[in-house]
Image 1: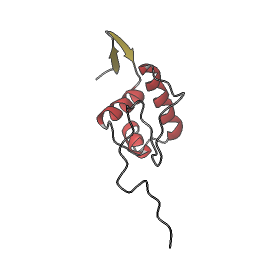
Image 2 (image 1 turned 180 degrees about the vertical axis):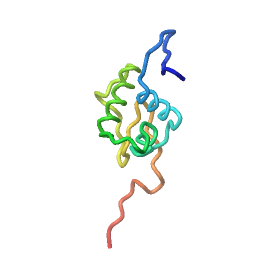
Image 3 (image 1 turned 180 degrees about the horizontal axis):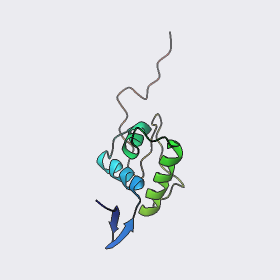
Image 4 (image 1 turned 90 degrees about the vertical axis):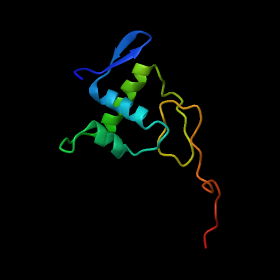
Length: 104
């Protein structure tokens, strides 16, 4: 593929390589939780040294812009480290995960 292109309503929206790779990763692993290290492995080779936090945040911002999504009030769920771009409902909590047990 020589260029990355997102098609929407008959028109094309250009995305740079890293934002498109991030979008592809999110679609491939829809509904799954994954680590930032998974994103890093997808976006950069092992011999590249970059500020990954800034790089990931920039890629997310560009994907949101391309999709017309807003980060104003993203969904968040207790005890979850990632929030998706969009979701109808939070993933199911594991059985017993919401109950507290006394120490000792």
